[in-house]
Length: 208
Image 1 (tube, rainbow, N blue to C red):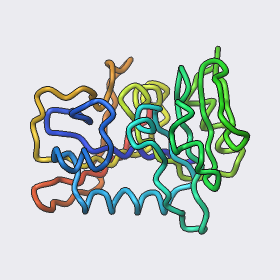
Image 2: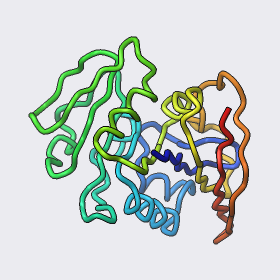
Image 3: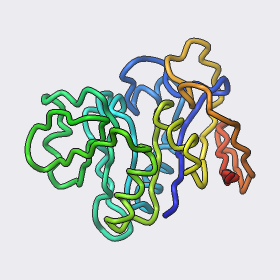
């Protein structure tokens, strides 16, 4: 299994300017642009599963409906502690496989979403093990910061693709890593390119 962390950040390390900021909001503030959004769709088309936090789902209201190279939707894995509001369009996306992951059971709305609990387990290792059993080979990690930290601390991230926006937010409300890592992670630059003042960086994460 191969885990790729895909993130867009400001030069000062912020990943969001406002609470519940969706993709349109990120483009408006300058954290993303049309080309970056296309790259995200390309990544989705190449993966078998996507991992993200519940705040991202609350912000967008629903999942990004992009099919992969096999012509099916990837499995979307959503980390949450308190669950997701039943009014979100997320619950109506019955054609997209969805897995809500939580430390203890949370309320589900409908019977097309699974709930997996990781209490007393290493959450990153447990989730990737479950996805591997389902046949997933390439998995995307979309964050946010606390979700990223879990997988870096467990030494599970293989590569990171960063869109570095030409922007100093100064007062962002979320960072690439929500809290400090247990130990530093060294990165090896594989390639990069520039377009419209945005830098697109591709690193390999050195494993311990």
